[in-house]
Image (cartoon, rainbow, N blue to C red; front, top):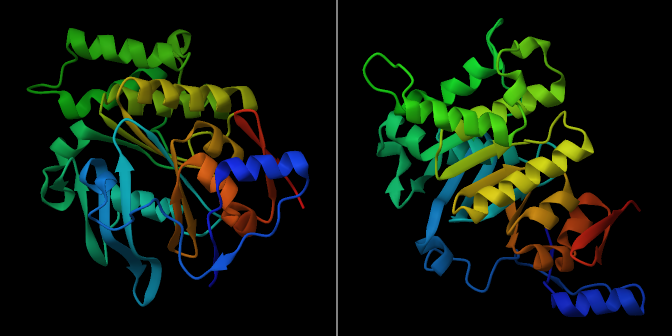
Length: 296
């Protein structure tokens, strides 16, 4: 499959001021940063990295061998068409799905060799469409995020309660702590799950479609929350189907297509590359610091 050579982002923006951009040059190699092998500085400093990671079921390959680096203190967006393998990649990186080959490293250590409790204190994962036991309240759900940090009889400490209150507050659920999860709207329920992941108080947070069921206002709040967390030095990885929001809020964009990593670039480079337009069949136009996604 042919891929599109990365043009200069400034030239791309200027071309829209002058008219439609010229068709980019076609090449036979994927798009990455200046150096894309494991000697790249981004790999050395990555909070989470995968080397030759591959996943499959029986004879079916879901994720072909790929190298992935998640920079510390940034938001990495994983995007791609439905069924391309982006959620599978997230599961592979989080050790919730076995690998067919390769290895994943968390803070420079092989995650497969780390105790589960230690992984949970370093990395929080919010899967897509999680389910809560019937009758569980919002406060009880969020408190489960403190489980990896508890000792002895598992009683909540003052520090646990402080972090739980912070997670409820930052997700605007402080008044809902006593309400059953199954009494919430879809958007409120999603925010409760995000609050639980935040209560885990980890340096790395993995989110699979975190804006699912949220209205547009809550979607933007969720992305801004991710930005705020990154500003605090936390690392966020988010699987998303929304191109515009991924470009606007992500520091890096990973494009997955048919189980292959097709692009690893900053948002301006990703928007200018032509790859997103090819894969999604849309046009992308930069507007100030945002991006306008236009259907064909």
